[in-house]
Length: 492
Image 1 (spheres, one colour):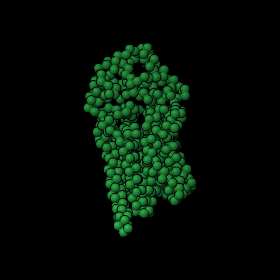
Image 2 (cartoon, one colour):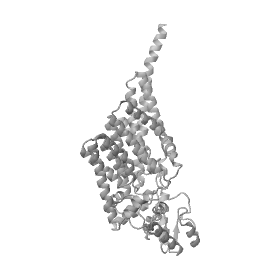
Image 3 (tube, one colour):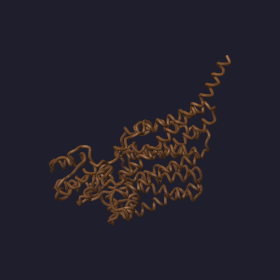
Image 4 (cartoon, helix red, strand yellow):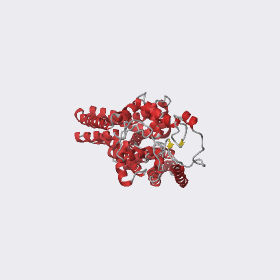
């Protein structure tokens, strides 16, 4: 009888020790796996920031915008075969142009802006959790989770597009709202939300719930926030619209007012874009939301409720358009990452209040689940890095362009024409935005007529397409198929 009692005592004393060791091993494994993602991201950035050709088909259009600014031309002008502006606000283009004055016109300057902004987003997500919890472990996991979404959000953090800078400014603004309460901090928050809007208009829809929170929390201080946003966005709109003879309003507001909606994306966003890839992180995040609801102050609970509504709601609304790619998921993944870190901290805090055995069991389960979440986001970084064959194919392509006598219409890659010493034309996606979103103004009519007349009049010595295009019928009537640009598939 005494021997049996001794065995039970030994078993109950060994069990927590074993669980603690397993928990520590899993914790180290989790940290190592999590930190791998920002490290891999930096490696990818290092290997592709200097790549002299496009990593994504709209990057060349960004370089065209930068070159246009540096040449002293206006960005927002009547749509034409020569140039059509992207339907975004201009801050990213102007910052990239400023950097390009030092580094030269090309992909490096705008990509560098995105890289700096993306690293800033990692830091802000870390600081969000760190300031809430004083927990470096949970803060590190939250920032690493966002880095781990690089691939599922389109491998977009570092490319010459507006999204990383837009999110950086948005996170700074919301960070100021959460952790500072003076009227000066509300003014600074309004400044950064305005900068986010001037980078990408989506910021307005995302920040509306944050504005409501500020008013509910303290009406007088909230008015400093709203007033700053209203004044800066209002004045910038009036000035930019005046400078561009009304075309700023056309691109930034009119075209965005008519997004082509896809009904199937109403549900696919929640299933495909969120729960299928971040299900474990979302469950852990929901635990934090539950704890907030039960124990946290009303201000903290309302802030994160409104932040979720803004960040996830904004991504969802953007995703409804079939023209939008995975980059619109940045805000949703950012808030899930923040709440994931907060949830990790809450789980550990609540576990520490239990018996040694139960605490160890919960930690083992938590670390294991988080490890599975990070492992599920694994990707092959080599598929995202241009190869030597890609580089040589690009050089060969430029040489082919040079060898064609006369004007060449390169529909989606105008900057490549510039590299070949030829005239650049409007970027294909920008043209599609006007055709799809313009409800019938003279801008659209003039653009379509000009392109059709150029094709029918055989203005171009060659037309190079990626796939079918709006004017495919006209092209097939007036041009003959000459073959493919590349003999080998899968390069460039």
